[in-house]
Image (tube, rainbow, N blue to C red; front, top):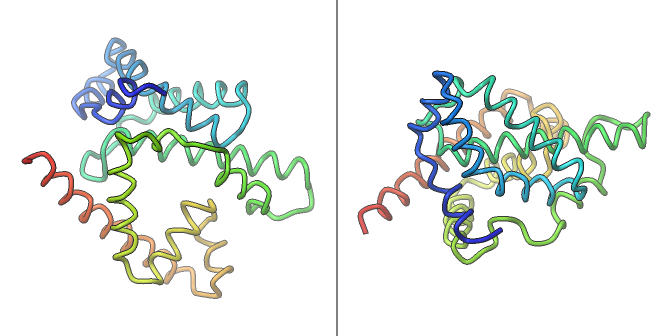
Length: 201
């Protein structure tokens, strides 16, 4: 993915989504133009199949059109919302693929699928322009209490549900949900401070 596409995706104006909420087709087209390269690249990395990545791309933007009113600027940037949505839907597809291959297996990702998420080669954020973001996120994660780090890693890197995490850690479901909620809150606050400082440099 070229640097200009990355820059466009990372700097989507939240006001653009506000226009999409109102049914502005031109704004939706602009959103697609700014972010589709990033979303497709991410989908391809996770799924490892161009046709399936293209299908996922369509699914994601259909969902964006239907659910854009749920976007909350206070909970993250537009690109973070799109990336989270894409990753979630891609993991759903991996789970469905694993279930077809192993009908009697549980609904958690098997080790091969989990490895596929981790090892599909360079991801769209590996470019030098985005290395700083990766460093900030890594630093913010490292600053979290170990229990919160562990819960977030299982949720976002292995794609486990809250119930699956509770079973893996042998912890009550409510405890797991609290750890994830607190961890995400601390991450948002930490990253918001970093980005606000960067805007004033």
